[in-house]
Image 1 (cartoon, rainbow over the protein chains, first blue to last red):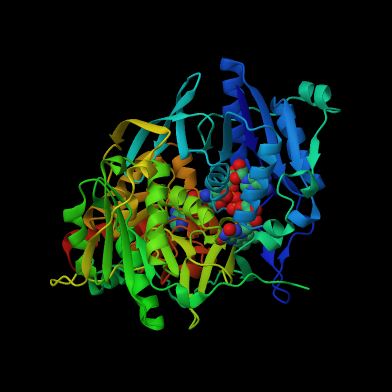
Image 2 (cartoon, chains in turn brown, blue; image 1 turned 90 degrees about the vertical axis):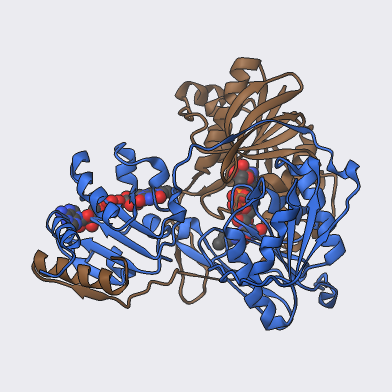
Length: 262
Length: 339
Ligand SMILES: Cc1cc2nc3c(=O)[nH]c(=O)nc-3n(C[C@H](O)[C@H](O)[C@@H](O)COP(=O)(O)OP(=O)(O)OC[C@H]3O[C@@H](n4cnc5c(N)ncnc54)[C@H](O)[C@@H]3O)c2cc1C
Ligand SMILES: Cc1cc2nc3c(=O)[nH]c(=O)nc-3n(C[C@H](O)[C@H](O)[C@H](O)COP(=O)(O)OP(=O)(O)OC[C@H]3O[C@@H](n4cnc5c(N)ncnc54)[C@H](O)[C@@H]3O)c2cc1C
């Protein structure tokens, strides 16, 4: 069985700020890390490897430094790593990202199971997984909370729905996105770090992909455009009450009465 | 030379809302989206449509007509009984191909967030996630504003050269219209070739989630923050909540301590709530918490630190000690009068 996990490099913190003048994110001095939700995806794949003898690959789209997250996946136990990197992939929205990844996944040899994180901590749309599945024309189940059984030709999972939980059996090839806490991710091991430090990371550029039409990638292939980014508004109009606790309780009580909550 | 792909926007008309439901129980986010769709539609003088897909739902479709939509398109098939991605996407595709809506709104539920991207990708169009503000231009371009980076920044996004324009919106962001006694508009039954409803997914079981009244549904919420020193001190918070017919919620530290049910966590990694009243007791107001509650209609915050960030979003900032103010407030509510 072959499993491919999609992982993204994200800023190390979400406490980012917007430059008021240029309206651009201040990214300087912020280091990056593996999207925390993707660690659950990697862990899920590694558990399957241990119980069923699967081969686990990881794939990422990003600038050359995204190799770091692939190295980290190696340190956790991944067997192979692919990086899709090309200036022409830059500026991609979810659609273009998912398209590029789907092209890379085809090139990497169509695995039985693709696992994505539930969402990222930067764009946090949770859209890339389902869109990859669409481009590959395979079924997907999002928000998997539990893996119930791994069979030869299918997988049985628990899918989180608004008011219910669906137990669904999905035939391979398929894609799942896993919820956080599905399994506790293991820490990268130092021993494996040494063992994998020279391990090859396969790199693909646009020219390696089946579809070579530049218009389908990066900014060109992105239907959504970010017009502007800005800090969230803070509503500062408020009343402040100070005084003895008796007075305060009176004020709150009066207000609750006035607003008909009591 | 930049060549921009253009779309004939006049061919795309109407605002469509996906009816989010499980076994015919319509999720309230649907009505909130209808409310917003009506507002947008009035600006561009276009109709509001609903897509309702499922099994044995025909009778439920009429309920939607009490909220002022023009037409509800119903796909009623056995294959749509349980949510499976391929048949639901097929039906959505069929609906869009027949109706050509310029805007499609989908609830940001676990179901909607799985379905909307799949359909948007099928049409090679854009999808903006979790919008908190939506507006429309005369040329039908949708202005979409959404938080990203865990609520630390806002992005204004548009989809200028593609149709339809897809957006998901979470529950409790917009307001549902009043239900009118008299229905208006009509229900239209739609056909689709059954082979399009094939799926590689077999649903083995559907379990109801354990019935806890969901925090999102609460009209009044009392929140316990880290100022609560011991688990038993939650009793006074619960008592206040009971007196107000409210639910008790907590900040993350209290969930981590195991004192409060994880389903009652408000914030980025918890629930987004929009109650009529929220009273926070000893909550500092970290962005991750505030992101989950700053749309509440009325915010009363009790904190002994007058510089606590929660006071930036509070309508009524009460500078005091919860161990004194809360018991006194409880006493006053019980006595029903000012002392
Ligand atoms: C402020 C802001 C707002 C944005 N809003 C939107 C929007 O509303 N709509 C839109 O289409 N785009 C939007 N984008 C662009 C979009 O976020 C990213 O550019 C896109 O590449 C990935 O989307 P995501 O981070 O939301 O991933 P998600 O869809 O949240 O990621 C889910 C999973 O997909 C996989 N994955 C995602 N990206 C990669 C990758 N590069 N390599 C490998 N695996 C990956 C991972 O497994 C991940 O856990 C926005 C960007 C910014 C900065
Ligand atoms: C990625 C991420 C996601 C997160 N998601 C969430 C989330 O979903 N929800 C969430 O809540 N947090 C979340 N957090 C944690 C968040 O950053 C804060 O740490 C948390 O909200 C703080 O909780 P608090 O306000 O109860 O505690 P504190 O920050 O410790 O605040 C306690 C407050 O009580 C006041 N106080 C103390 N004693 C008294 C007293 N006797 N009377 C009155 N006031 C008193 C203090 O002045 C202080 O302001 C997240 C963090 C990260 C990094």
